[in-house]
Image (cartoon, rainbow, N blue to C red; front, side, top):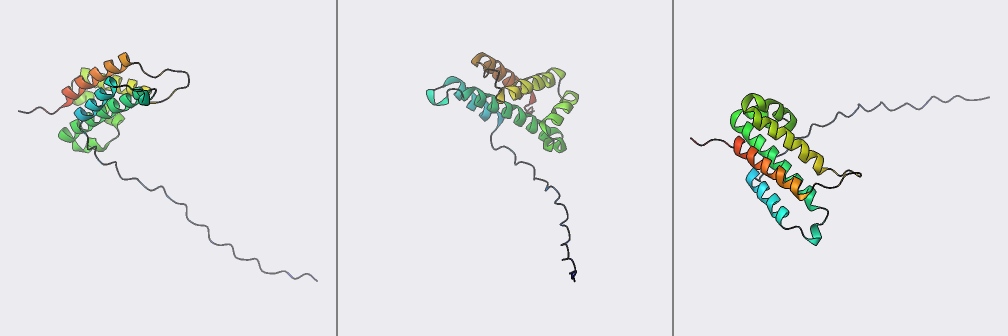
Length: 149
């Protein structure tokens, strides 16, 4: 005769873990001007130890300078926008700053973002491209800087 044992109870299913919202990143401790100066140092001193790395490092510094200038611009004018992603901040920029500055910010940021990433079929940005972006970044930083009255 076969004895049927009661089934072992199935432990209750754990409730699914909800993703934990990460706190916003702390504000940068570097000013846009300091980031621009760092990019200038790398542009002027490519060495054997930085071969193949410095173009993307310069692009990252320039992009971060753009983002930090935009964050500071919003912090001074509309603090609630300073905590939004850069793309959302850029979409609002044309309504508050002049359209040329908004377009220059977006075009420069897009070029730098593409330059920051490795693509197996593309070369790193050239020094000429980086110098052009560097000049655009400097113009945007100047246009977004708070005016002292």
